[in-house]
Amino acid sequence: MKRVFINLLFVLIGTTIAWGQCRVIAHRGYWDTPGAAENSRASLQNALRLNIYGSEIDIWLTTDGHLMVNHDEDYKGVVLQQATYEECKELTLSNGEKMPQLQDLLQMMKETESKTKLIIEIKRHKTKPQNEEAARATLKAVDEYGVADKVEYISFSLDACLELVKCNPKARVAYLSGNRTPAQLFVERLTGIDYSLKAIDKNPHWIDEAHGLHMDVNVWIVDKVEDMRRLKAAGVDFLTTNKPLEAIEVCKAH
Ligand code: MG
Image (cartoon, rainbow, N blue to C red; front, side):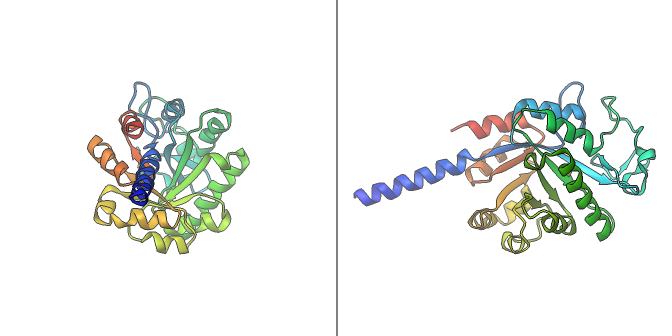
């Protein structure tokens, strides 16, 4: 009887620990506020103030080696991966900010006392050399600003992910495409899966498989409270969301 009780206790503790680790990543920053815009300085500043786990951004490499922060490949007719910095630098976001370069946000990361990490998504460029070059340029910029411990990396491009771990074996790198098992990625030295809600619902066993390999499980885009609750109960580590305030409440609830 005593042994049964002790086993039950361990199960309960294990469950509590798994739930306690659910953390929030603001998708493209916390942009849904007056004066902010997706992938802006303001949305990063908002996320830093929330002190959540992470604030996600998207980056593109220009033809002359600059890293522009934006989600869409084509912004107001400028295809970022086929443009020069000169062609990008006057692009204006919906909140009036000029489109940031990665360096602008790294400077904010350097100055902040917030614990929030910058989760850098290297967008999938058209060619393997572009994806690898984007990965190297990103690592170089992060090193120059001395914020390696404040950033993590994600990409739909496996080439970009592999280049990241090759150049910096200590980097936290998660793959986004949802078409590889955690075990396959573990062999490639990636540190996590960052999969869509649909991919995780189709393969719920990947959560335990990843954890068994000490890999992180991040799920996007989780905006409904009922989805947040069930993913938390399933032991997911990170919820990437456009609704960080709601996710904070779900993650801290018992
Ligand atoms: Mg993204």
